[in-house]
Amino acid sequence: MLKHRKQGDALVVCLEGELDHHCAQIVRQEMDRLIEEERPQRLIVDMQGVSFMDSSGIGVLIGRYRTLSRCGGRMAVCNMSPHVERIFQLSGLQRIIEKVR
Image (tube, rainbow, N blue to C red; front, side, top):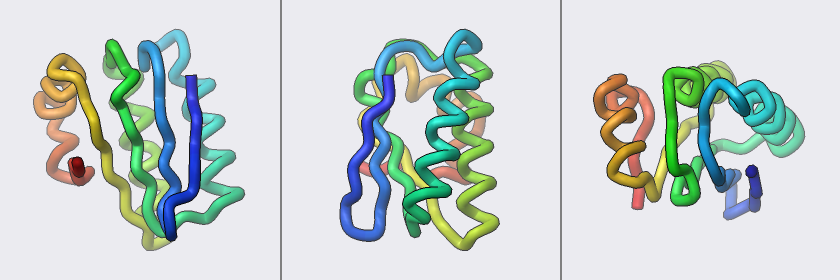
């Protein structure tokens, strides 16, 4: 469900499956643990493997954005499917979280 790797000063987290109310708490806890351990300047969430995202997934992204912002870090997302990108846009996340290729 969640894989990660360091890439320079960034932590890249690759998500797989559905990011919904069934798994949001687990994903949130694991991402928080990784952020605490790695202390990245930038978090990149690779969403290529995410087939579905609901409001719980939006909450996971917003919460990690806030965590990083408090520490002076930045957050970005990449590789969203058309469905996930639509949810991302409708929620307004593009105003605070950068979308990269």
